[in-house]
Length: 210
Image (cartoon, rainbow, N blue to C red; front, side):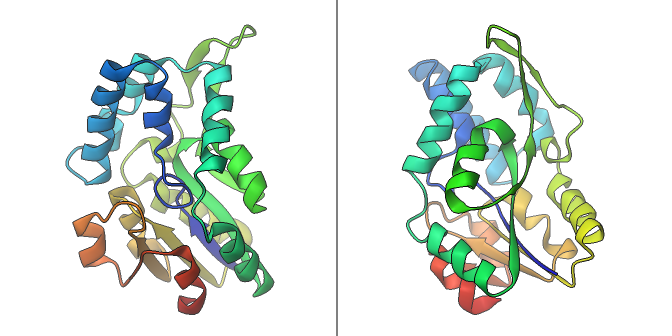
């Protein structure tokens, strides 16, 4: 069993889902959330310090989640589908590991043919209004993606695990995987580029590295 794990935001898609949710609340909220997201992705602040803060400012509805889910598919990385298909044909099991939201990412996962999504659940009331999020989920905090990979390795009894991602939270998986591949197709984060054993700007290049 071989696992190929992808970050979602700014990797499988050009957008950051939390920023797109914020955009629905107007330019002032968007600017604030975009700044916080950038600080977290570049490792300047801890994700747990802003995770709930961002969601409380946005309070996304079920309809908002669906809208951003469609946005993910519209902005999919151009080679992502072919790359996932090629890796699957070579015996790799693709998984999405994200600090984003499971319901929002699901449409993109379905488009790519990825059955397993490890991401944070949003909670909604019967009328579709925001009711919170799963604050216990590992990817809401620093080191969480490495923890998820440890669980997946044990569950699948994987002989090899590869992680592909653009941000500081992805780079944290370096000790937990057999290969970490930094991605800079949309945003090149200097720390990731410098410390990643491999670095690509197109997902198509992943196939030759694994």
